[in-house]
Structures are given as structure tokens and as C-alpha cells.
Image (cartoon, rainbow, N blue to C red):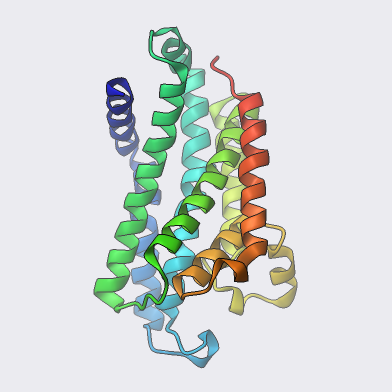
Length: 247
């Protein structure tokens, strides 16, 4: 366990040394919230069922952080570590390979949590956002969405021959998802055809689940979102295990 905690600390420090990754994981979503909050405010609107724009934006932007870490930071970091021979050297140490994998997952999860906490704090302090759900339920939904996207991220890293190709694939997928899933622009604003297409995108189900749980919906009301995300986690995780390469 001591090796695990040391690895986690090292990997977290390495993550924070990357200014682009740190910005998009920790500061991008709160910055977007401040920007759009200054434009739209958070007055209750019938368009959002009596809730304000920022009330809706905070749980949606959680999906923004998840996709940024899962499909951009994680694949690039993993593929780059393999390309530089870091993974090969880790495998040659007495430390069990599982310790590296778990510490790697934990470090990305830690960064995601920090980004989400800063987002929620910004929304609460600046816009007095409302929360009507159960904290444990929201946490469970967050962990499901995050691990599902981590599985997809490791799959991209395993399939990509280089860090550059992992970056290209990850960024294309992430930015497409960001803008047609409701993570950036509310689903209510999107045209009907775009909303229909968005149902085939995993991030849409993260956003819908987080918004629902945030405002007190039961898990039974979101069985479809849960089924899609569990499927991404199981299938993506199984394929990621098969495609993972140490060198």
C-alpha cells in the first residue's frame, strides 16, 4: 500500500505540472460557468422548469470535466508514458503492475474530483445554485460516469500507436460530445434532430443522469442512462484490458 500512495502522489504531481491538462480539468468548467453566468444570470426560468441557467449548468458541466479527463488527459498521458518507456520501466520494478494501474486511475479520479469541487464551489458562492438531490446518490452517479469514460480512455490509449494519435482521436471525440450532449449547451436549446443524435453519445447519458440526480430524481427514472454507462464501463473496460500495452 505504501508503494500505491507514493505512486499516487507522484502521478498527481506530474499531472499538475502539465499546464494544459490542469487548466482544462480544474479551471475550464468554473471559467465557463462564470462567463455564461455573467451573461445569463441564474434567475428562475419556465424554460428550465423554474430553475436558473446556472442551476442547470453545474451538473451539466460535471460531464464536461469527466469527458476532458477521460478522453483527453488519460489517453494522452497513458500513451505518452508508454511511448517514453515509463510503463516498461514500471513493469520491471518489484512493484505489482496492478499497483501502477490503480494509482493511475486514482490520480485521474482525484484530479476530476478537484475540478468538480471547484465548479460546485464557484456555482454555490457566486450564483447560489440549488441542490435538491441526495449527495450519496449524486456521488454514485458521478463515479459511474467517470469510470465509464476512464474505460473508454484506456481503450483509446491501448489502440493508439502514439501519444499524438491518442491526442487526435481523444480530442475529436471529446469536442464532438461536448457540444451535442448538453454538457456545454443545454439539451433544451438544441434542435430536435441534434437531440435525437445525442442519444447515441455516452456523454449525453452522463449529463442527463447527473442533472436528474442533482434535482432529486430516483435511479429508476434513469435506467436507460445507467444501462448505457454500465455497458460502456464493462465493454470498454474489457476491451481496454485486452488492448493495454506496457511497451
